[in-house]
Length: 186
Image: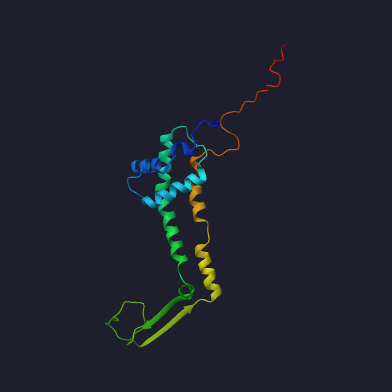
């Protein structure tokens, strides 16, 4: 297949996971993500940008910008994914539990309660406790809100600035008419 772009495409620069991981070792000294997360990251980038030409003609500059973007946004993305995964395993009963508000008043000067926990205290002059429980609909709404949002697409959009996205290729496409093989001068 003949190339029609002046720059390489993502899959030219990183044809395999191993090539991506090698550059990760070089550019990512801090290790902002684990090996498993880096594999997921490579597959996501390959799935989204495999045949997309890069924005710059310098592959090294592209790699630096790529790993800078990874450094900036990957930890946040993987934390959001972990939180969504945690919400996925929460049972309906656990999600329906609300919070508890405890208001204490003591008339014992110069003596602190023996507990700093947010639990009810037994020997106190006055205490008000309010427990909240969510209805089934509110529970589903809260769980849906926690899972809602396209975390992956939002993350992948951070990389769009690294690629040349246009309707036309960077190099003009030339067309020739070879109908009869004769030139118009004859």
